Image (cartoon, rainbow, N blue to C red; front, side, top):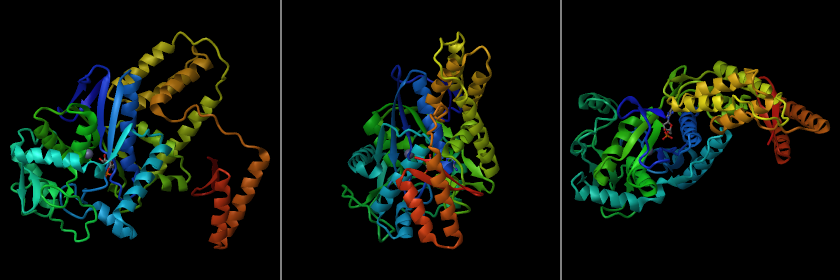
Length: 464
Ligand code: AMP
Ligand code: ZN
């Protein structure tokens, strides 16, 4: 497989440390709010990478963290604590916020057919590991204590600028512009490993440590969890491009200082989803969530289809028009597949040809749009019987995960009439501002496994 490695800025042939086994780490969500669909684009790409590697025959050991402590509103150590901010916003405890948004994140993932990694670990569950690592970094002179906090000294790292490819002066401009200065640091990009001096009087999450009661910095959690669950050598580390600096740069610095050797061979980054105004945000403009898309009548898998039609290393601009186009194409594709005759027949001779083509698309730096084109090619190919077409599409869908051959749930005519009657009663109640009645009808149907979807122009339903 060829994959683009951000570390070398080259397309490289992928060779794992251990034959046939891939150790893969992906940075997880910061659970202080819902994930926006931009965040979820990154998880879709990582899901396809994992499933693509499996399709090529690798055994993938994948670990992901859940950030429930330490991430500031700035990716450096300054700004507000994201979790505290979430707790204040909703008048809840940090733990309640973390539990709620972690569950919401995995529910969004399930709707998008993003498989949960086999190991998912909360940052707050491994404080002992971070303490052990930080102690070693102090003992070996990579870290220092200053005014109660522990910092990593980036001047001790000989390849600190490799991943970002930036010169120190260039990074410094960024630091100066966006970040208030922390006077305890020796160098501007030294980063916090452990804080005992919190600037937040109401800091809820804190633990005992050899340096006093405090909490870990953001970056150490990924180095710690990866080390604990995947060992000293990592094959692939993923995230969105914004993670390159400072998060992944700092992960490399501290992990390699701790381990005493190179840590991860391939760094794979997904480009952003932007809205027409630029960068997607949770606080500015319309907060685009899976839930919002559903309320507007879009199927989550139409969004997955939209993402897969572009390459993970290209920026993608979101618009409802573009999503509408994807949804129409997706529905049309599913309809064409549904019309195929399911009768069992011998597989056509060209089956292997298409399987090889599909593997080539995966191996070509995860070319998801070519994978989708192959689905259309298979449908068009007169030399393939319907059974072979279904067989191939079913195979491809192991990676694409678009439910291309999902059995439609059929519905009895009387039940359909009952649902439509309830929907019009509910619409009338909404019109009369009788929201209590409207909510009651929605709940009544939901109890029967029927979910009402309020679209922009009309109300539809889904059997769940
Ligand atoms: P966070 O929950 O903020 O830690 O981010 C979760 C993931 O989403 C990280 O891998 C980020 O790099 C990624 N991410 C953030 N913004 C975007 C975006 N607009 N498009 C794609 N990925 C993003
Ligand atoms: Zn991380």
